[in-house]
Image (cartoon, rainbow over the protein chains, first blue to last red):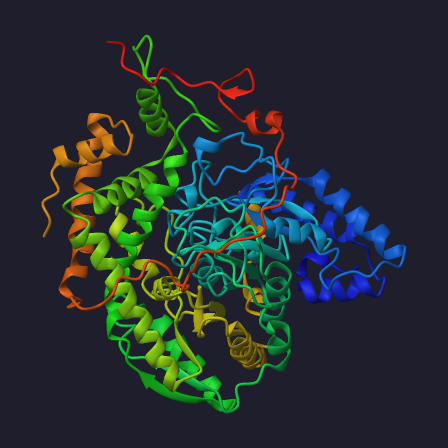
Length: 505
Length: 98
């Protein structure tokens, strides 16, 4: 009997279209897998078995009635808990929103439902997407399926781990500074951050509005393109949504052709702090692209080295404004200060935010408030915005010479749980290669490119394209994926340890 | 290096409406000082004549037709409120007592 949890979304879709299986059967198989392994992984904050099976039954009936269905109809999906799902608890990994049942769906959820995709549940994340390890979740960390003592990256570690552990063929992530790509890198999965404005932000709990972008988390490049096509496109409910068709991502993933493509390697980006095994795999991947007909060009992006500093001013500044909405008045937690008889609204706000926010959220809100405050604005937020311009100019100059840029996605493979928890600066350094794309608004993808020689853990290869040219990501990523599969004899997750044995611990 | 003092952190936390215990303040002040020291390095880049960038898209005013569309009912809008009364959000007192 086929184990549908081991198939890609494209393979499941084919089996559904040919009548070999039903969405109910496939959805149940994933729910069973979640029941079996999620005790060890903790990728999910909520599992909605009832809702997922009802959606699966509806799509099976529609198919039986001969209705025209989309390419991913009946394929189940997991959704990051930062995305509003009507009737299904949405917490963003925070105590502040414990028990919050959204009265509406995010646009991407509306699109998933319209595409006939059953929602398995909501995935764990760093609180309000602030973190690179999922350890800042108020509900406990997620464990990396490759090694349960290690983090699955963050903030979207729940989505990446769910996909890596075969609990879901597809998941939705969000990426403000790398929260889709870095978790993909350390779990041996694929993740795309589309062009800013390519996917609607309506119904996403905002972290940094000029940086946030939702995108696919999958096990194959084609699956990412198929999901990208479902969730992408213009939305009148998001004023920053691009009014243009979704780029031809699926076609590009099927072409998988890099012949004649100019690939830019950024001089000096993988310097200090990069693990030797990660660098070695990066160089091997570049060579594989050359073998397939790509041309390598070295480019300079001198302002990228200040990207991390600029990001950790811009993101907290925007976050401090966005998180002002958690004021204990309209939704979420309300806590009164101790020992005060008739507290004022201000006292209730301060006590609620003390109780409802974790340390990392407090750090970033305070940092952002400081960076925006009178007397410091020009030196911090203002200067960071200028650096942002310089980074966008570096990208523009590089794309005059090359079609795509490539880097290692993250400096290291998965680190141990607890290793960087008390050292915020060490945690922030994980984002060094992913952040420039968010600052400039350009799209990026991470695909697994091997196991590092030091520790046998997955590493990621990042491809970046110019804004609105998302299809280039998929053309290059699919070509590299094909070359790597040829080398490995199959996908990288076939080499991951069996979880069922470990899950009993 | 920065010199973000414990008092400054306490002041900014108050502006951000986050109450902090003494122990939290001790811990966060040290960490924030280190982080501010790092982010302040944006000042090392010469950018006097560079325009600031607030957003990746060249945004103009974005409008849509002003049409009545389905929206939340008062019950739905108030369903998650910590306290509601008479179809309104009920809040603690907003003025000082004296």
